[in-house]
Length: 479
Image 1 (tube, rainbow, N blue to C red):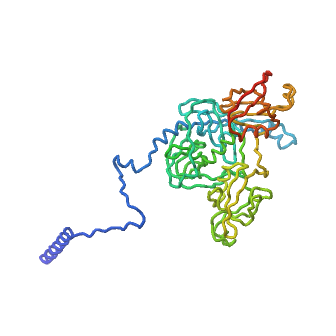
Image 2 (image 1 turned 30 degrees about the horizontal axis):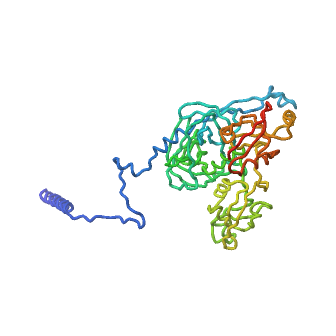
Image 3 (image 1 turned 45 degrees about the vertical axis):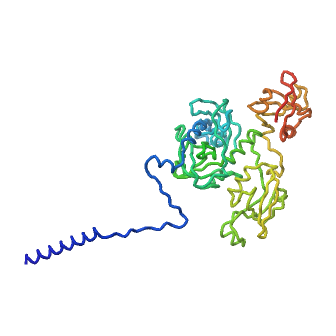
């Protein structure tokens, strides 16, 4: 019995050895997975110096950006009423109360956009602040003045008294592509000069955080990490151009979880220009009520396409009605820029001003019609909206003379320059306190007359007036 078992085991072992030798010398057939059509194959070096060529170079953009991004500290005062006697509050009709002020601070970022100290940041960083302090990347510290704030775009412009500062050049947010590499530069958690990288995840995002009626939300969404303190910082492309101002994150914890949002720089440029020139945003209105088109809405209305926005009504006397736009039309583009929803429409219109002439493309009965439209204001005019009867032009802030000043200087009209900043007026040698009376020897007795006399001209004008000491002065102002 033992002999038979031994023979069986020897036979099994021999078979196993034979099978192993056969497999070892068998000619193997290679298995190839076919490449999908249309997708080019490319060898990627994972290691070694040659790997650097397969990735974007962030060094130049980062070194340019960090010096133009500043740290902002804003101080606020929260006011609340405190009752002197807690029991009196419930037992008597007129409890004694006093106002209690509790200070608090906010930390964020800003972007230098001009060498003479203009800085863009978020509105929520500086609106109603009692003090704004700016720290540059080289640790110099300045007190900043708020030039203008705009809650509808969450943008603000501030200024420090300094020259020859590094600044970021504007890019073009319309040219930004989904998938493009970007850098976010700011001061998260009070850590200065922090740079993170990511890609553009989406454009024209409306996340409903500004809340106010007429708010402009058309954010660039990225996955570059930003956190508290990044607000107001720069979003730049790989060329180091400013393409957005970081404003928000989408998070259930208040910290970065993968989604960041920036205000497109083309909106920023318009807001900054208005603040510098007028001290107030010049908001253009098309004058329509519209509905975004989705699949169900298209079926309900019998529409053959999901493109554009459906015009449900036009404002009487508004720009759209004057141009011939009708209820039931489908707006597909403005100035050859496609419109497929609220965010895109608001982004395009927010870059325009009252009085601008644009081409609006609509679909009516299946046919495209291009209509010239002259945009106007919410009050259906094209007049410039001024800031509390004040005017900012070419770096000079004007205020009309009050009755007491008119009597003192024996004038019936005139505009006092209350502030001079680098610009055409300072270049001409005009000083703060100058009272402008005439432009090209024509009297300017209203804000509108002053604006009309100094804008829309080329070459130069002659301005004359007097200083508070009674000295008359004449200046040639280059425009």
